[in-house]
Length: 480
Image (cartoon, rainbow, N blue to C red):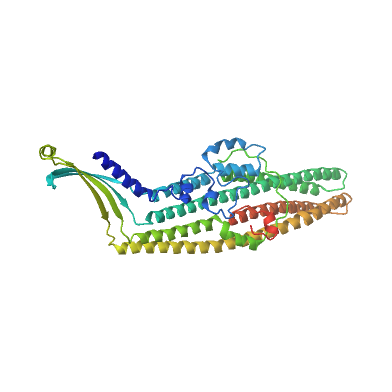
């Protein structure tokens, strides 16, 4: 008879657990049990246009197994290499990924029944049955929540996991933007050093010219002192730029997830291609792509599922089980023909009488939904304003590039060349020559600054939208 007890108990528990198995629903089997690291593909069932924001590295590129990428940061590394390293090794990305993984692992427990309960009763005073006393009772029972309760709990956990996945994407977007911003500053300082060095070399050549003119009494000692002072001033500027560049290198190392002092490649020249964006298209893309807004959207869904779960508390839970009573009168059974063991079914139901508590839980979920809704609204307005400012900064940088790089710098070079010739023939003063040198240096530095600003504003726009800017998408009227 004991064999039949365990068979019946196992069947009852398996049947109850099977009603809410976490593997029955493919929505959660992929979300909680899959080994794929592609968070973007998992976050949405329809994967509705959620695109990669990592310049060649997918949202699942991060991971502890990529530590060997440190060897790839050498003199030949590019910006894409730095971004790939940051996505794999940056603590912020790894922490967000761990949080997403932890949230995914909460889906299965939320959709699984509580453990069955094994009980044992010993009769201090024997219980007389119809035929013989039963003093030992062993039972197995399983608590079954009201229909749909586990599904609602699983939906809450799944939506919260998707919200955590969006935080993971947001961390990647933030890190990529930080790397691109720091790289642009690092590249600008590299360019500024080169421009200042060339200017210093021009001043050294000018100093030689002035010295020869002084020796032939065609120029005064005052001119030589002034050119030497200008040379020393430019030398001080070069040293200042070198100090700032070292600080920018530390900032870039921090942006990619490394400590200060780690070697970095030479950044090369900043891109000089014009950038044209459609601000209206980007604003329209915010609601569909931005990870912050998507996180709040999933949070709102989780709160709606939480309200549904809270409503289930108004209904009773069930308890089913079996009990086996051991007959202690076997000796009497042998004499009188009785003494069969007891096997009984057990059914119970909870009494949901604390309805004020259940209503408070429902109202709490409703209030949390309202909070997330208002936060999403506020965040969208802030992002739209930030996007407008970044777009204005991008357009301003583009105008300054056109002004300094394609107009004023060219004119300043012509002015300097003609002023040098005029000075040697006595038609221009030394003050005119120094001013022409300073003007050319200022215009060239302003040109490089505008290039860096444009690159940084573009990185900022990409961070706000939540994806890389594809010029083909933004100039032909198609939605990004």
